[in-house]
Image 1 (cartoon, rainbow, N blue to C red):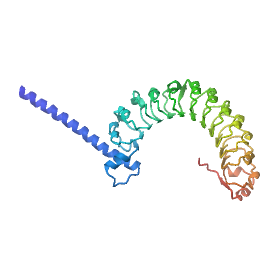
Image 2 (image 1 turned 60 degrees about the horizontal axis):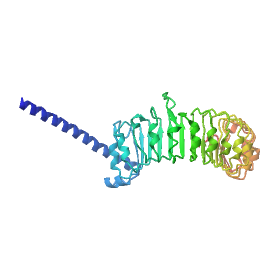
Image 3 (image 1 turned 90 degrees about the vertical axis):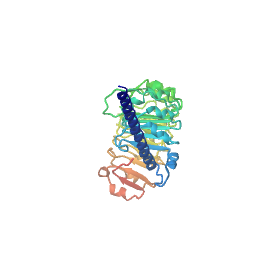
Length: 360
């Protein structure tokens, strides 16, 4: 009996040792894969030593394809001593808590993954978080990211799960200056008015009904409200520091409030029911103006915009551009050539670059 017990015990020890050996080999193999991925990411010389790579790497992109579908053990990233940015795409991961010990980690980008495994993670040192097309049931883990400066969350339109981003979870993040939310339901959005430090805000397809909080965000330099079913832009006129404005794909007719925004450089008004752009005539810093898919008939206002460089009037009601025949400055003009009268004459002006294809 004793002999059988000893044999059984030795068998268990052998099997356990074998399993440990297999796991160790997996870890070593994955570390080698990660070294190669990191070296390629950072364009490090092929002849560099492992130690050179381990100390040089500050950023790493790891995808499902890179690891051929294998699980990523986040513990293995500890070997990169100066890692600041991690991009994870489509992966299954283990040992998520390993990220907590990476005190130098500043940026985390996660795409096409299940975020529920990150629920209890503590990353108070993180500065930028981007979540793209991930599955998640809540966003509570963001609440404790006290150093967060930038937050971007884009939810896949095809994902029918109802997830709410509660602004109450963000208001104590006093360093948070950049917020971009896409296809996300938002709770307590009025609390954004207390986050006066915000400089960039994007709310895209978020079904927001009330934008009264905007007039409190005096430091805003960039505002994007695309696909939000907007019918007016009341409150925007007080955002005097705004340089970038994108309100495309809405139902806006009147843009008179924009006339107060003297610092605007880029203005995107496409796919709205706008007819009159005269409120833009005194905005002398505008360089890019997109009016595609609107009801605008006259764009002569650009003669009052000394810095204009790009004008998009595709799919508008503009027919006559005689006032640009002798336009003296360089201008990229995007239009439907067949709809413009005397277009051949227009082409003679070498200061104009005419195209039907907008590249933005």
